[in-house]
Image 1 (cartoon, one colour):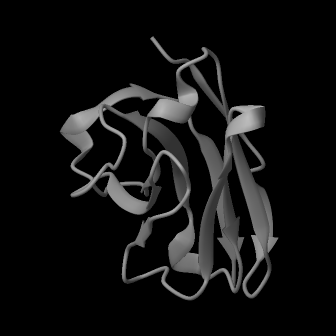
Image 2: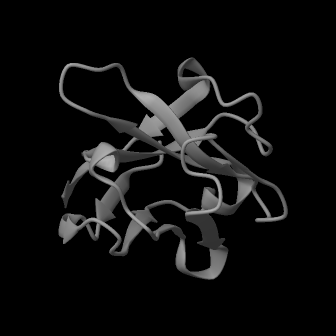
Length: 125
């Protein structure tokens, strides 16, 4: 079982940037696709960004395309989410997750084998 620990959340003004990190335990990290989800108060958890096992394919929710970038460093067992031009509507708890397959698509939350504990991102207007 892969264990995931997120970090990098915090309070930022609108237009600012944050970089989230997710460190995974276990030697099989590089075999699986990874993704970021988020959940705002009173809303359902939603997909934000995903990346295949090699980093060669990425997908983004329409709401974050052009602003967020997902990347991974398999040598460090780490996946990142660079968030630029942040908006108040990006405020949420962000979770990283490990998929059951190498490629991840279509990024259904039920297909993820492990989840982190989440990190809070708050964007003030």
